[in-house]
Length: 296
Image (cartoon, rainbow, N blue to C red; front, side, top):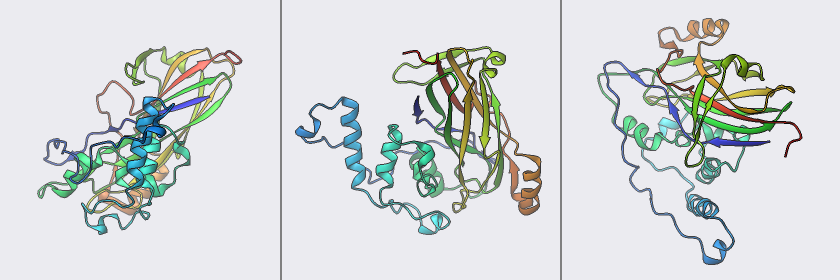
């Protein structure tokens, strides 16, 4: 079995009452864009992608603290910032670590999510004075690919987090779907999967953990649960037909008992993040390449 996390981010539109979409800011000042070249003997017998990973890893190892672009109080509810954070981020971006094994001290940091050091940071440094973030979530990564045999099981991991500037508590559930067609980002070209949703659903058993989650605010300071881990457990049936499939996950309402409890606590600060973006793909999609058991 092979799992590939395609580290793209999918952000649901942020609703700022009375506010249009913000422009993306340039990279944070002080960050270096140049990638150091490894020593000649280190580069020997390594592929170009291995050299790139090694160079970025060396650069990340030299950084042990986050820049002081926001006051420390903004992070007071989060775990301590790991000294090897930037190194771990590089390893994850290139698929060298299993997302399921990453501790919350990493994925609860806003820098874990690609849009923070651009648009997110710009928004938090220059928030609108006459508007506030009502709801909005992001999903990272937005894609995963799995090559596996009939009769196997695996777990796909993604993170769901509050969009920048959101001040509410958002109840989020997970809804399963099998899109009739979907584009898959893979290497330089990607490919398209076309499937019969009814037939595709017969090939798998899928469950979610957790079934519902409460996403805390990201502004004016990050809430303890502003980002959460979503696990998707997939069982490939023994008689699954070999081929390419896409399993989609969209945000939906959480279980009603959870929602009633959260509403009692947060009242007007609680919203349900169950809405459609109008896009032609799921928020999180798992491309499954099913092979005949025992085939080479």
